[in-house]
Amino acid sequence: MYDIRPHEIAVPIPAPDDARLYFIGRIHTPWNDRKDCPRQGRTDGPECRIEIFEPWVPALQGIEDYESVEVLYWLNKARRDLIVQNPSHSERTYGTFALRSPVRPNPIGTVLAKLISVDGPNLIVRGLDCLNGTPLIDLKPDRCAFSPKAPPKP
Image 1 (tube, rainbow, N blue to C red):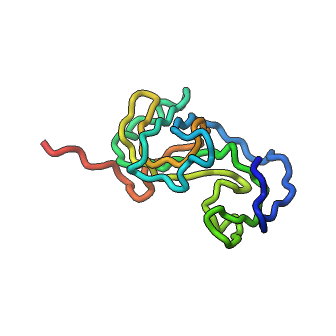
Image 2 (spheres, rainbow, N blue to C red):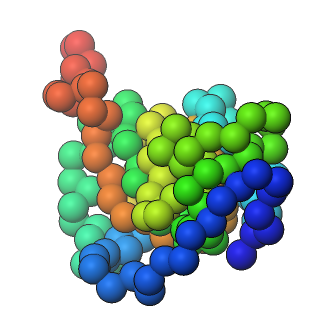
């Protein structure tokens, strides 16, 4: 658990028992410490690997037709009890829902990542902003691209 910064407010929270998630994979990035992790993913960032677990691998069929994927992941190292936060880059405090901070009641992260390649159960992407070993909740094609990219012209 991370320390509370000046002016932050935490509340007591019950043990989570109202949702069940299946982690469908694991995300492999170069960042093992929160201080090294980028604040926002960038499509020119390092290549990262998303590993899909069985029995979910067949669900990747057709994903290679997209240029970008929306990655939803569980921020398993984040605290969950702050309702007011003092971001390290600001003098001002904000309510949790006014921030993209990993500290949330339900620490779900999302990022739109550039899909580089697919090799069996592994996706190589750019644009992630999470720690190495982060559990994967879901993958979706880019929400703005409702159809796959056009096939190459002969």
